Amino acid sequence: MAETQFEWQKTPAAVWRRHRSGLRSIRRLDPVNWHDLKGIDRQKEALARNTERFLAKEPSNNALLWGSRGTGKSSLIKALLNRYAEQGLRMIEVDKDDLVNLPEIVDDICDLPYRFVIFCDDLSFDVGEYGYKALKSVLEGSLELPPENVRVYATSNRRHLMPEYMNDNLNSEMRGGELHPAEAIEEQVSLADRFGLQLSFYPFDQNVYLQAVDALFPQATDREQLHLEAVRFATSKGVRNGRTAQQFFRQFAGDQRFS
Image 1 (tube, rainbow, N blue to C red):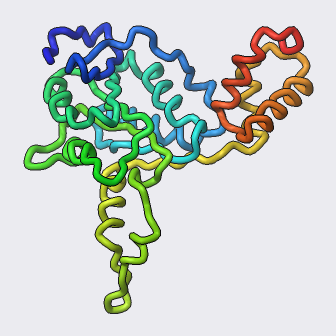
Image 2 (cartoon, helix red, strand yellow):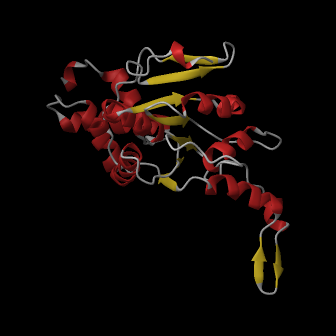
């Protein structure tokens, strides 16, 4: 992959394409706005502070956003790019199955005058997968230190990124009154531990869900009717979260009752 193919000054984000063994610029960025994300103020503040420190060349961490589906993990990272691109933030999305290429990707950007976030969405590993080994080397380095201008931001539904089985806990043992986890548990935890910033996301309560709906319908005059329909919609899906609010908006945007 030749870095001359990219004008990073004009390209805020790219995605790795395995079949062409190179990066492709992202032509249509998700326009999600930082201030439109509701119910996750604590996570927004923590991730913004870490990113601002990274952009200022101060000590900063790799970040793992984990928790319930549809609660804004991916949207928060996308909004982060929209917020900080003009300050030199660049983002490269890498699929889990392409993590074996991560060292080569990093080699091509480590000397560039930009600050890069490697974005791994919906990251998790099953038994027998080894892509996490390349990820480990970028997170903390090996013989060579990890690049100063690269951080990894990942989202996952799993706190430890790897499956956890009851049998793993049964293989733990007590020695001298201290609990010694089984090797499988140590392996599970060791990968997640390399993310210095870990942010948890939980299902929305009804008030937070309705706040998200309100942000999507700023012109609505009959809030009572809007909330009634939004609750019905969430009930039919069996889940209240930011994704449900977005789906409700796509179904009812333009409805005369809410305009």
